Image 1 (spheres, rainbow, N blue to C red):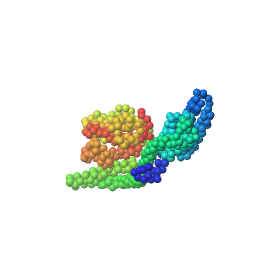
Image 2: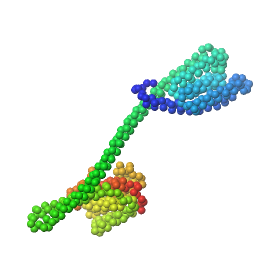
Image 3: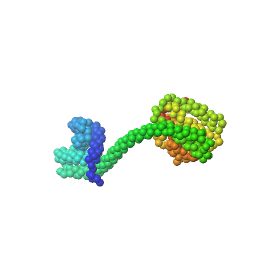
Image 4: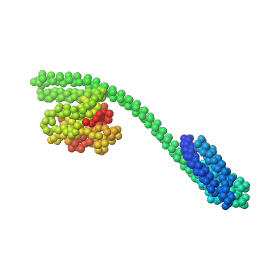
Length: 479
């Protein structure tokens, strides 16, 4: 065998494993061949042999009994080897010997008919399945020895005539060697291909092990980074809680002192000073609102959720009551076209989600009649193009998706992720009633605490739909 590169130890090991598998499969093939030959030889000897050796008078000949005995030996011993030592060189050698002796037996039964000699060539072709030239050599030697010995001692049983040349066996042997040349080319080529395949497989396994090791190292690093990030987030959350809590007092003090100055010294201060004091008071109140939102965000990240069976219809009804003054005008509509489901969640937190999304839908809306639609569907009911691809892969087919849709100003696609960043506004402070820009950040955090996700589908200046899901375990039943 030759190859473009020298096979390493692992390649040779794979090659030997594949060769052993081939040997065992070929052993199994010969198991059926031997059984078939046993039946065929005995039928042939009982039908043909009496007339072959006696002539017109038909009677049971000694060859019938000899054939039965020899066929049992030539079949039984190889089958035992296949059963107890399949794949070994000894078993291959036994099968090769038995197969060519079967050829000799069939030639003898038919009185040396030339057609029966083709069994030799067929046997050699079957033995080539082992891809082992040593097996072919053994079979060839058995054939040559059979022709030499019987050619001199009993030529009638192998050549069909009593008088032959002393070198007649060489002609038969040369035909066998002629076939062996082609079998050698076949065996050499197939073994070479098998070795090449083993080398490539070994290379792939080496690459896989290398990648697996790199993945293991990366996974370990990611776990360590995740733990560090988790600790860092916890520290940051605690810092945000402490900072927002402690800073509120001095801000209130600034706000109160400014109010006292405005009330007590209003007549002594000019318009410019009053404007500046009002500005200080407005900024302190604004910072206090930021701190309140930061404190709430910190609490959402830190507190344990209180799970319970929650009817989403009751949450929406409560929000409608709180917005009754707007809804009564007829310019604000909340549409719920069917009963919403009951889910297992933290009611207070989920209420924050719906309240924030509904209020934002009304707030960022320039239409004369502002409409908010609240509904839900299953994953397989929603158009695939409307789903976030990363979220889609993590959801089960029956998981519920809620959505809040409005007919407002819309959001451009490049701002889909930006709107969830804390204290981020896409408009000027005085536009659309102002605000701290933390509402959607809190919504996203609450949903993530429920092991869910939120995403956006929007047509700029036409509508916006916020989709979100809680995890499947949170769902109890659809009402």
